[in-house]
Image (tube, rainbow, N blue to C red; front, side):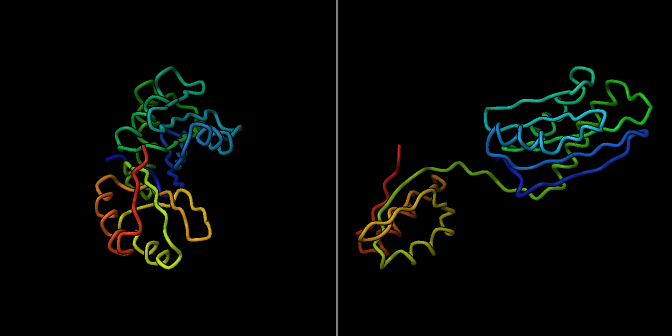
Length: 195
């Protein structure tokens, strides 16, 4: 099961006089990942190497380090930690001692992995979209049950009779939610799965 981070985290390490700072954060899109990289890169550092993964989208950069010694090991750390919807930026301040290609790959990949291991993780669940109309009289009871079903409200609109809710919930919770909504409302609330 893939994981993301609950919030930003960081890890610092000195390796043969070079300073490494790894920064990681949850992201929802490639644009958000690139914005994080731009915002947190240190122009005074020797290298700002990074990688991100959002579903099937991923990118990485060696930022002047020898090809394959920085960005790819950071991306491998993201994969090895079973993370998704995550960006990792590793900033290096060169200390005057060459690390070699293997040393660079271990330093960048290791810093990224330790940063991700130190962050608070959250499981990413595959969710199904569904909608229903809830009369005002049952709205508070229905909202109280959403956590039980691990359901998120994606959209909520009101009309004269109640609220139209668009929900995202794990597929295995759909049947239970449908049954309990019908019980709460004596059959008036029907949960409709969206295509």
